[in-house]
Image (cartoon, rainbow, N blue to C red; front, side, top):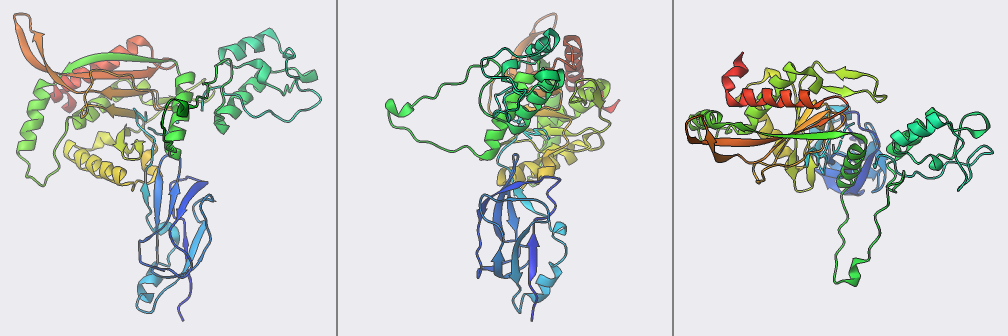
Length: 445
């Protein structure tokens, strides 16, 4: 008699506590290999969990609303007689079975997410900076509501610099309940970790409005990824002093070269888009200015310089923005990057990305070129320190010193974290990108 096969959550890229949003099978159902058993959702993606064995479902161990992680038992399956051989082959540890995942998102960016990403560690890219958390347990040394906070002027100044209402810190760890600098830091960490949606630190809450009084309405629940992306973007907006630098680059020769390359391809070949050249130019500029390939430590004391070059690309999907990451772009050619981006973008739109495929980005590109626009302000996909926005190129008359000539001009928008990048560095970085795109032969140097 065939033995039961356990189906477990496979390796999902160091993501824990994944929400179960739907269970599609029940005991007694016959399932086929790779048939979707359940739908899981993280803050960056929703994932179809496929069956790693075929047969009759004996027991289901999860339900909607549960949280699962790698190795969690999903169901047991009794393989059929004709399927026993194949089922036994699938009896290998669950982590050997690749899971197809569906993004709902990060993100992006609007850019990033305006997705996502990682967020950061998505998403997203995604959490107001200082929202009022649930009151901490009261002790004999806690401050009473309406009573003046017990803190030194230096600690009060520190709290104001972080945008914290010191009266909302109810636990002072110092002598006689005095609020210390660490109490302020812990308050901010608690709020950012819990993602409490209420307003605080003097930021007025948005009023609740009954829109039905004005006419007929319909409510649509936001997906988890959109909710968390919004929180992450709010956190980034309130915590990062961001600057956006706008410029244009002449891509007339680059476009002529791109069109010539595409003309040599067959109809089944993946066409080269201008984004491929932007990726290569951005990579070269990041090597020239390594502070753009960095992240600021959580305490703000150190700059973590990265020796790898991964570029996140904001992708618009039916479920929201996600930011898949192209890895080791420095060592890949234009054709290879084109094929890889086409494949990963298609899987993103079909909802089949792994969470790990949206992690590890160094800098994100958010392109609206296929839609239009002349400029926008993308939000940095923290913990990255910059994001490059791209809008639609158009022909413009450009003065060459003697006459106006038609040139194809591409608008670029660089948003950066002003704690790490100053204005002159931002301008020089953009100038380097323009130089590479204006004469792509420089990418060979």
